[in-house]
Image 1 (tube, rainbow, N blue to C red):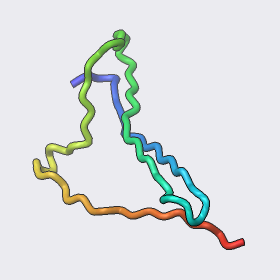
Image 2 (image 1 turned 90 degrees about the horizontal axis):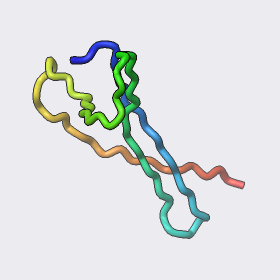
Image 3 (image 1 turned 90 degrees about the vertical axis):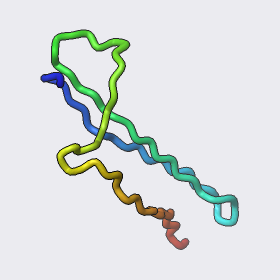
Length: 76
């Protein structure tokens, strides 16, 4: 464990829309971590592993459900 260091998950969602009747719209979801440290040490070229696991909760993988998204096009 390292003190004066933390991270938090971040999400970037980008949607590319097409005109009606053309091919499907696409959504890209990027999931990454924002790392912050105030240890006084240089962390350049440091390997690290980020995890959202909570070992005290249990070691079972969560059940993942499908989440559907759509783009609302207001009528003219």
